[in-house]
Image (cartoon, rainbow, N blue to C red):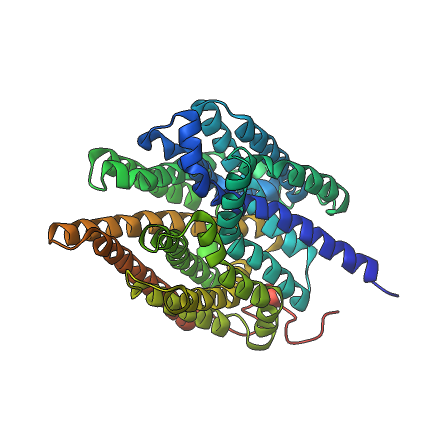
Amino acid sequence: MTREPEIRRRWTALVLLCLGVLMIVLDTTIVNVALPSIRADLGFSEQTLVWVVNAYMLTFGGLLLLSGRLGDLFGQRRMFLLGLAAFTAASVACGLAQSQGTLIAARAVQGVAGAIVSAVSLSLIMTLFTSGEERARAMGVYGFVCAGGGSVGVLLGGVLTSLLNWHWIFLVNVPIGVAVYGACARLLPKTGALADRTRLDVVGAVLVTVALTLAVHAVVRGNDVGWTSPVTLAELGVALALLMAFIVVESRVAHPLVPLRLFALRNVATANVVGVLWAAAMFAWFFLSALYMQRVLDYTALQVGLAFLPANLIMAVFSLGLSAKVVMRFGIRGPLALGLLVAAAGLAWFARAPVTGAFVVDVLPAMLMIGLGAGVAFNPVLLAAMSDVAPDESGLASGVVNTSFMMGGALGLAVLASVASARTERLAMAGTDAMSALNGGYGVAFAMGSCAALLAAALAAMLLRTGEAADGATAGATRPAP
């Protein structure tokens, strides 16, 4: 008896899930190109404009962990559809905004909804695809969307802002969101809650959400008010105290939000540490390479978007097919370490790029290496993060790894941007011309990003367990799918 209709239904559902996730990923970057137009239209100052981005980052990063658990408690399908509807409605509000307050508030709602969609989507994919081979292929598609969506956002933002206006970078989400909601409501499996909702750890949820929100807030404001300022230190201190209180609560409560035993699973713990380091390196690549091309090489916003296409194409080839085959053949440890090593080489290539850099010599090779590394590594790191986890905790594991990526990226970007700025100032004070000083700052930041990726590769190679027993997410990989 054929299972073709069921298989087609699952893969169609995957496409729809990825379209929903793509909207979330795009919104983290599509705004950057349009910021000058938003500033001019709504009268933002340099100090207030940053909150168009920060309002999204704060709510997104702070609520990821809680969102994953809510999916387990109230049903993954229900929470995904709720998040998708809220994100679409918030996109309408952003696109129609005529004041600073309206836009910032709507961006904050987008962050809340985006956290729900992002955390729950990975759990839904793990539920839809249970055999090792299909799951690896599905995760490859998901990995491609997450890894390549940010670069597409820069290109799309440039096109929409140039041809239409900044309002359309938000309004473009509306028809996609409506269509995806309708199709997902029909195609996603109607499963109930995976865990008893009376077991929600309210105290733990409040502690970790406030702690993460404060930590992200301190990070995104660090460059503006100073990393050693009383405000920054106070926020980081309170966040640390709340996290410590959270750990104490989780060790004593009967039904913890985050069972501490989760971090005793070597693959899960290692994958999250690797995710933090890799996200720091990748955020540095994305933002700083765009700045290098715009401010040093004098590329337009559209040219910057086009420059990212080689990396996107490489990630597409590997994430959509080859990465899954590599995982099925070699497991998760080798491909993950190798992918991170290649990405580190790409960042190192950017670190030596000169002021008079040429695209073919100084940009294209780095883009190809980073695209190759990301395409190979993204699938294995997600599989490792979800391995050894029981089905009723899949949403939790998804929230943890997404939080690791978000926090690692936010922290890494803020720190490396601060290092780049400090290096540029020192070079300028030493008499270096402005453009060389600027490029020198970028070079140091790229080098540090490369070191972070190298460290992640080393940890993956040394600490990840291999074998079918360890690779719970790829169970069945050594035999044909049933």
